[in-house]
Length: 401
Ligand code: C5P
Image (cartoon, rainbow, N blue to C red; front, side, top):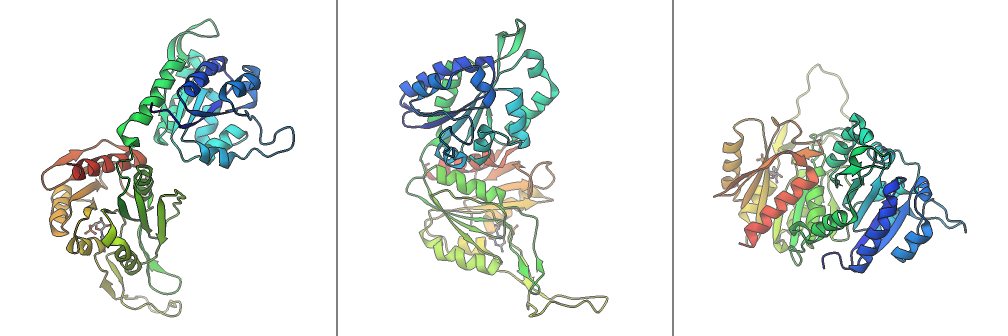
């Protein structure tokens, strides 16, 4: 069973539907999952800790400290979970989640988590229809969370409409499907995936550099996704604020294109798949001034020399590697992408256009087209995590052909 052995963290907030969570916990435990329950303080008015802890076979926490003075570590709880399920998720908890209002253990745990998050909202029909709820659910989806929509029926208020928490069977089925779906397969187990990410900075003098707006988000998302699929990931990242502590990811941070080049070729030979998502600077100052350049003349000329093309060199040295490049184009997108596929000896290229709103550098979303020598596939605007899944699904299809 797909749920067997999975670690499910259920966060209960204060709605009448909380009583249904008892059935859900029993179902998960029966199917072999490990269940841990957290509650918001107001959820305690609806369902007892004793019931939840007896059913889940684990202590239930609602505060940062237990009565005996021990600290309930939200980071540990968050990292323990394979999935987090917010159910029932009240309007209040939903609002806090998407706006980072971290005033209880549930939200602190949610904000410390890296795993997928499922949200089963439950509220009165007018609250469910309220623009703030709609907007908050959209935001949660943009974060990459999965919404299990509320159902229509009789509500605690006596009114009839949409707002009832999805039935425990529906929630259980959704989570089970998630664990059994392809994207959670360990298809990349045994493979080494080399990924470049972020910008590069080319020093002009000790304080200045030539760089670009790449955030590294796309490359880190691909790295996390490949690692989740069982790959050993070598991530070579230029200066980026992105972080990861996935156990399958070995990260090497570099600054310049030259440094990135050197690190890439420390690992390339043993890689099965190489994905170059870094926005490497094409040129670097010919000489780096030893001291900060003083402003004096009205004009300053900096002589640039071409950086090595890392991806092109990977193409030239290709033996067994499945090689994926990126193209960020502003004009003649498809033609340029196909040209690069050919010129750099790639197996696949991912095109994102700066013309598409929400695509490209700093956004959390991206809109891509994938080309191989014989195929073209176009995808809608998605979160970068979802795009990472699409890219790796495509890679898997190609290498498992
Ligand atoms: O030719 P262009 O820079 O547009 O190609 C983009 C692709 O090449 C990206 O996959 C990028 O990571 C890679 N690249 C590289 N080294 C460079 C320039 C680009 O690996 N010096």
